[in-house]
Length: 130
Image (cartoon, rainbow, N blue to C red; front, side, top):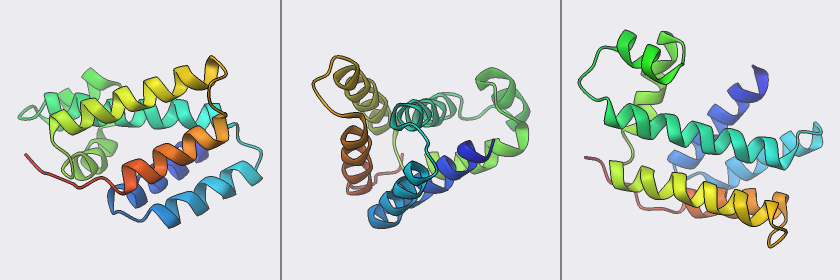
């Protein structure tokens, strides 16, 4: 979908350490009336896909696509993003997404601010490859 594509580009900016550009894209999505919770869920899903891909290293793109439920053409794009992280970092990022989503749903954190914090935190994270 168009939203998923924008999230993908936003995460490309995060991976590249371009938090400012990622935040601008996030603000654009909000201006288009996208829900911060929807965006947060897609962020969580995206980083979970990167983690699953990392765990399936060595398998063919076709097998990976079937196992994680994405089109095979997208596997190469996900691989490029996952290459910026090691498995432990991806686990931490997924847990951070889940914890933030939980805080929002429990009313301890606003949804819009929660996504902004994730973008800034993830964009400033030092990258380590395997």
